[in-house]
Length: 160
Image (cartoon, rainbow, N blue to C red; front, side, top):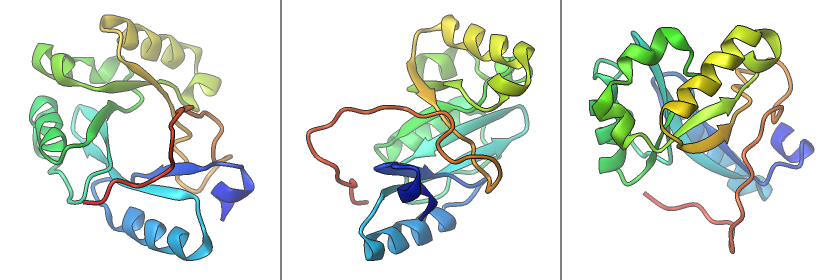
């Protein structure tokens, strides 16, 4: 309901290491007439965080980043480096960077930490990926503070 109030047409619900909240959100949104909800998860692993958008089953947080990205791709979905600050860079090795689809380049940490904002930008410059804006909502702060604009001919969910 907050997404509708913020005029968001589509949101991805990506809790840490689980997909259930996204599935429940998708079910609820269908009953109230929107917004479109994409199911996903934030793979919250030691050394890195990776957003998997559109997945239907959870990805193990025990995998290295390249293997996790591969598992996301096996489901036909996209993998996004979540708030890639310097401490996560070693986990995104050459193989992971080669197959990564996108990276958050604007995220609430940009407003609270100039150093983190610079680090996220520097990560993005390692390999120009699709740039993502994310609110990383967690029920705190404003939903949709940072947004990704997608221009599409129709607004649909890809079914699993």
